[in-house]
Image (cartoon, rainbow, N blue to C red; front, side):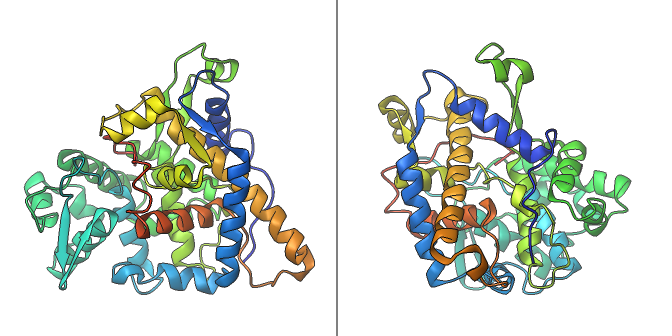
Length: 370
């Protein structure tokens, strides 16, 4: 499986994300900074990590399929439908500072965050609830979702009403525009990651992860007035790609155009690595548990700097890999270095070493976008 090295077209969704990130990092007086040396050190760290477990299409698929006992076990149509529902709901799992988080018990294990979402969906399917059927979730009610997301503790799932709303919209749009089929939605992209992101953000409002910027901040922001992140749209593409990597059914010739998925966990890993830096004021706000409103300059900066940092890390990883092995020496089976793999690696590291990374708190923003 090979990816195109061609740059995205000027108006492509991923190019809009990169342009937004560059504009954000150019803002004067930002409370977030970029450390190029630390980005290069992070790249070297990830290259070493990858050298012990080289990524191939087969290894990517085997890592994704059945992950944590919760991802679908096989790359089929039911997996595609499952991915869409999960990524439609993949937002805002953080809880009160120092308090318990929403958790779900399933098959003798208790899960939090994203894995609690996966466990909830699987539990519902096992109970005979057609959770991946667009006709069902187009009309799913608040009381039904309360049952589906019932907690193992006293903490309810965050933003329940918003989850009902985004599911209702997703089911309605799939039914009316894509023959009630996630497979038809993906097929409409004609093998292009950028096309699929475009379909998602144009047709499903909760995937349109963008924010109106303050005009006049700098020339680029003034001319666009909108900054783009597209976290969930990009992660849906990435999950489909990873699930089907070994089959080559959805190879997405431009998968390399994707950026990192600007959430609240990967920036924490980047801050720990020193790739992004917080001013004392920003760090104090995060440590106090202050909630940043969606569109708060600090939230925008954290997300934008994170995207740009991963771009620098990716470029340095490519340079180091080519320097060490030589372009011709690389195995034909090796997966290309892209921001998807970097994001996956950083997210895994952040979740596995949460206590170690606690010095750099996550930012807390209530949003359906991440």
